[in-house]
Figure 1 (tube, rainbow, N blue to C red):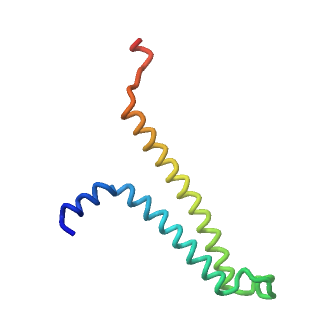
Figure 2: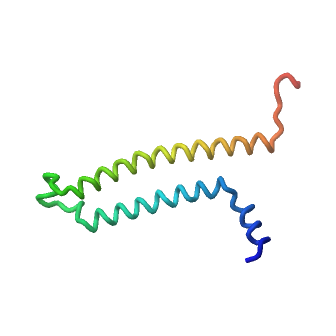
Length: 103
């Protein structure tokens, strides 16, 4: 790769887009890792230790799942608001704005 190719990639993927992609990628990776580890340790099976919540790892798994979901919803709201603001800025940038006083 030469420097022109790298500069072209940097202009194609601005920093803001990379942050959004990395955020979604980390959420997906954490969900995948947490779900598979909980399944591997048998936290979703119906047995004596899970019914009476005696397995501390499964208790931690439940707590981590809850907290990840809570933060995940906040991140989705923030990214949605950011996307709406960028769309609004794009619309106002490329459309002529007319105010009632110009008539």
